[in-house]
Length: 300
Length: 243
Image (cartoon, rainbow over all chains, first blue to last red; front, top):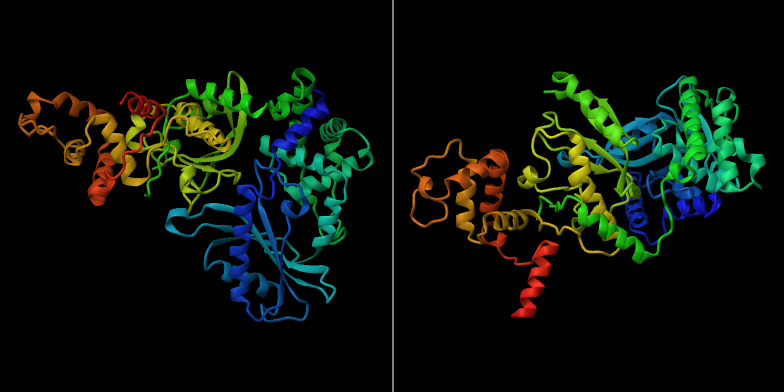
């Protein structure tokens, strides 16, 4: 199997079909959050949409978050006069069902019932207000930092990723981030992949990834990324500081060494596409020598 | 109580062992609580069969208490039949009363990861592939407790079972007490050694909890006869065919 065939298998194994349990659960979460918001802002014209990897087509089965935007129309003050009010009122609305943790422009939802107190549901809600009637650019409130207002454009972000021609490389980079516990924001990683591989789109996937890691290993100190929706107004340098660059360089160096010494499977694990029967047979063999422990659920 | 502050050497030892065996897992201390996070590999003969994103929240009284386990990748549906708590997403890895068999109190955390936790995720992968639970599963709630003690004590008599649990949960046990097997003998002349062994293996807290759960459920805990393990299933099939 070639390196590219192997990487395709890695991506296939991480794919989430529309009918998968994970996607159905995600859709239910979105419906719950949307209902909660709409019930609280009955008189408000709201645009609620998927915004993260679900919308970009970059989801990996191993780890994903649910990002939802909730934007108010430009002339609508029913959800709050200022951006801070809109943010705060969304926080109040969501707090009826969740523990809400402010996280930059987003509100991260966590459990608030005694049995799930503080459990991270990996759902981010981003409130905002469209700048005009074209429903394109939007202003977000920033709970931290010097500037309290951030201009953005969801469609530019989505198009930047979706039309990058680098979806596969982005998905592999995201998987690499998870496997190596790298604390880089996914949005920043996506921008870095696109920046470093823009002129490598015609290369094979394995060549793209090797180039990406080589650049991180050798030139991460010079790496900068720009928000395509707001290149001058949204300073991302804090999201890619020297400490993080050093971590990325170290992980990239180790990864390239792994490829060199042990092959690609050392990076993402063995994902040899086995016939279902063969896989089940291996699983059965594994079970035969495993500790025979039976799961139990406390509640009947 | 923060075990990692009370016993920093143990913390370093657990961290080194776990991170050495599972390089994609990391120890993190947040608000005085210890978490183990990262990608958990399901392995067989040096081959990674599957991976799950996990978070283990180690008990404040670790290693006495059981870790709380969560699958953080959102891969396993939060459904009762997958042994995932629907409300908080915690994984129901084992029945606490059975802990002594799988991860005795005081054992290294690595043993929990390579033992019951590995089996739990291996089983999840097999169920995802359409296979039955490879090691069987306990029924939910009181019925599962009943199943466990039925196997352990070899009795289906709920009254006998609860008396055993009463004795395990008691602060002290006296030899002149009646034996829970109800044969009229004193404990010292009958199942005293068995009670002693049970008390060594099952914590009073777990016994108390199981006792109250069984008492609350009453006869409804017994209203099931489904074999629970692969072995039992095979035995049941054999009995059916020979009967």
